Length: 89
Figure 1 (spheres, rainbow, N blue to C red):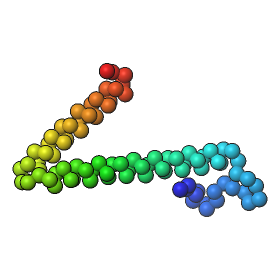
Figure 2: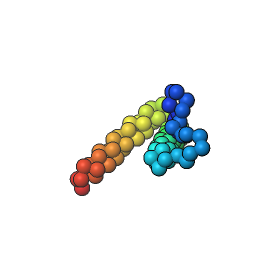
Figure 3: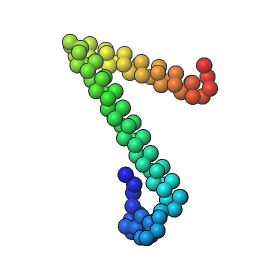
Figure 4: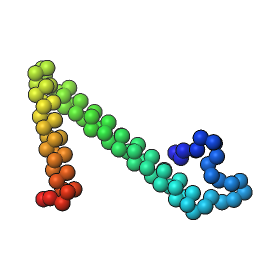
């Protein structure tokens, strides 16, 4: 999905092919939109999985305990990924 400027003109002149720059910009916008949509879908899939884990717990107390364990695991994972991206081992 590409965006059209507020004046309604997309930069294309009727009767002329779009320039290489216009094609590259449209492709980049499409790739960005695809990445955003895929990231959002993955995020919701993960949250649905977390909900399934919590729903499997028999009592409110065990739901909260499982939630705390999941939060701690996600925080450790985030720290590990951040360290790896910073060049650490």
